[in-house]
Image (tube, rainbow, N blue to C red):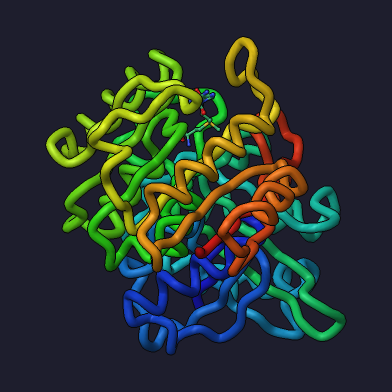
Length: 341
Ligand SMILES: C[S@@+](CC[C@H](N)C(=O)[O-])C[C@H]1O[C@@H](n2cnc3c(N)ncnc32)[C@H](O)[C@@H]1O
């Protein structure tokens, strides 16, 4: 079977994408970070084209497949590796991930794999990860990662902004907003335009896609990424402080979706506090969202956001808590909120 990995908590996004692509009947089981799918009805290329997942694995599960057993039955490993045939050239080093990796059994598997794959074992930056995981008292899993680079590494990302949203989450937020069947999207505080570009990837037929950000640096990163994505005619962005009056092409327009990765924690502008910025964001949504439109927001400031929503014309229709590892190796907890009028 296949296993896809995603940011912890992003299960709804992945299931929505699988459903839209007609692949949901292949789901065997899902938890908050992994979904298992049958190989019978889904190809590797179909999984690699998913926009909400980060990694794809080929998996075999059996009650016997402990490291000790596999070290004595290496033909099982060889058979599992056959799935790599076409992609083997993409990998430069491998790593075995399992408990007790300094035991003689695991060391013998490592020696075997070094010979069989003809690439070195590397614990620091391997691109081929092989996991031997104990699922429960009666089940072991041998998983081979088939995607050398995370699928979240998009080709359009030529300019990176610190604090940029993971594109798999940006894609999922657009799906949550229903952008796949909508014609217009507004993205306040757009940063490097991840949400807008992913919106166009969800739905190339969007007629109006507009973003703004206070920082010139963010706008220049946006432009680089939008150009690289080939979307310069489809996405309009501009420098604007959210506290300023909106220009007429935004103020006089109704959008079917408003999506935003709001600032949290970072410096937002000289005299501005988060409460004023969030309050203003909701005012804009009250004015510019169509009556049945979707407001989808990601923030780590859950309480502040919920309080402001309570005093607005919106209600929270769905909440998706996410937990992701930052580049600094710490967990960042955020929530995606879907609000409706
Ligand atoms: C969390 S970042 C968004 C990152 C973006 N999703 C990306 O992928 O690059 C928040 C953005 O809010 C912008 N921002 C902060 N204060 C603002 C304000 N007063 N008006 C408009 N944008 C603001 C910041 O410049 C920053 O780019």
